[in-house]
Length: 257
Length: 170
Image 1 (cartoon, rainbow over the protein chains, first blue to last red):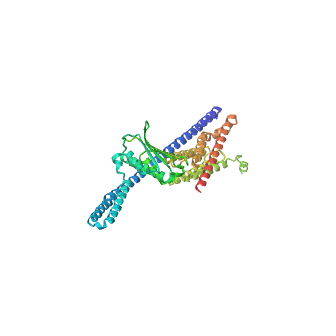
Image 2 (cartoon, rainbow over the protein chains, first blue to last red):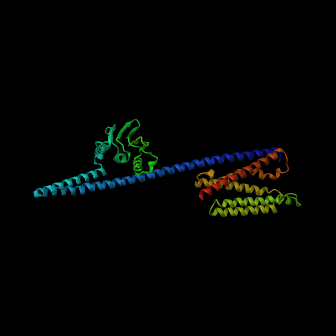
Image 3 (cartoon, each protein chain N blue to C red):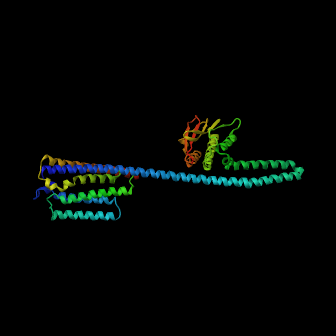
């Protein structure tokens, strides 16, 4: 083989080597890109599935609550009311036992109120009629007590209404946040804001309690439920809390078409 | 042993090269049997037997024992390159390997592909080159040595990956 032949062989082999090297690099890049895409798709599907699961769970829970509330109100409430009426009628017919019948009627009236209260907590009737802000205000009024926690509301939503399922979810979230504040925060003041800015509608919740470490509290059922409910309506939750420095929740709501 | 064979009547030790070819090609084909399953394993055995037969025939009635077996070396190069390409296609279709750079088989196949495709022309024309001793000729063999070095480097990385995979799974 001549010198030029060897040179040609050398050059051709070098070109093949280079081409193969480039092809290998491109192959790896393409493959990894595909794997990343696959992994992203799988994560999205998993998230979607989780969201559906939580949504179904919450829906089931709400249905069950609604059924129990209706039964309590319509069945037990009605029975107690009828019993109270009969006790009062009996008292009218038997003046000698007026004291007993009045006490019994009072106990029954307390029972009826209790049933109404439980039923109302299970299914806030004013939520569907008057909206989230009013229902939360009523919730706040119940919490507000002299010497206890002071809950203040700021409503900038005017008469803005959300879809029923979103209102219910956010009502439960507010309920859960208030419960947490009462049970754990040792706070004296809570501020709930229904805000409306250029970016859209949002809800803020601040307390001046002892705060917590959000990373350590991730396993708590309460916080998990809050996150799940907000996730189910495609909202976003931001938590800002430090031990000893109070807690702030900010819920950004999606555009509801 | 190579020197002893070289001192025999023919004056070269190329019979060992034929033996090396048989060992290398069957070894690599048997190694790939671990990667593939089903009929493909049988195909690999068939190819290995065929390659051994061609090498033996080439040594006896073809180029002879004392010549560089360029035919079988070239056939081996084409088979190994094809096998590597088949592996890459198979992996791409399957999409099961999460990290290619941590895969034993990727490094083995990449090394084989680079080595055999780049050396194919050299293997084909080896006998035409052996009578020359100029710089260009030496340069070509230096490149071959470099590619050999690269191939063994890839083998080393592959075995390191294999070692890690075993450690993770144990």
